[in-house]
Length: 163
Ligand SMILES: [Zn+2]
Image (cartoon, rainbow, N blue to C red; front, side, top):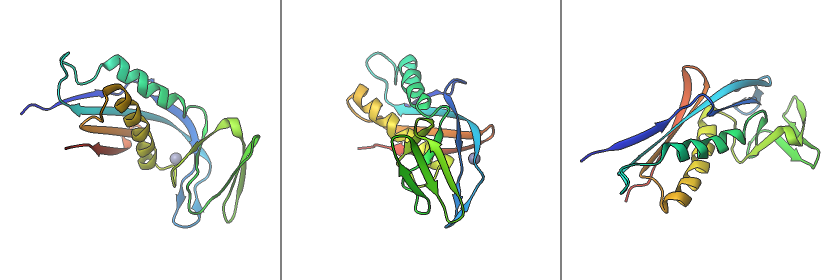
């Protein structure tokens, strides 16, 4: 049995965004930013054209996803501990001790519990698998997404779709 994997990890597949993580029930990091990088890989059989998936298309799809996060504050809509109120103008985030008010257009609202690299990888993998499924007519056998918060520090998620 042969196993093929294609991987993309270009410099432009990144996003420069602000966030803070909540530890435990109420300890919030200070607001700060990262130059996040994203790598993704598909493990699957070769198609009739001898490709697992076309690199150009793979990069374009992933770039669309990373661009949607770029130069924004990452807001975890499903936080257990933060209050998040969204109006047309602003996003207001509250914790036990602090309040942040950010222009709505400067934010990206993510259905995740915390903006850890792990959950950002989960969100990116969900977006990516939707788009790959639309292209392929099915999910790839294995999809991996790695989100680097900084060089040498990353979280990876693996989605398996095996019959
Ligand atoms: Zn951080």
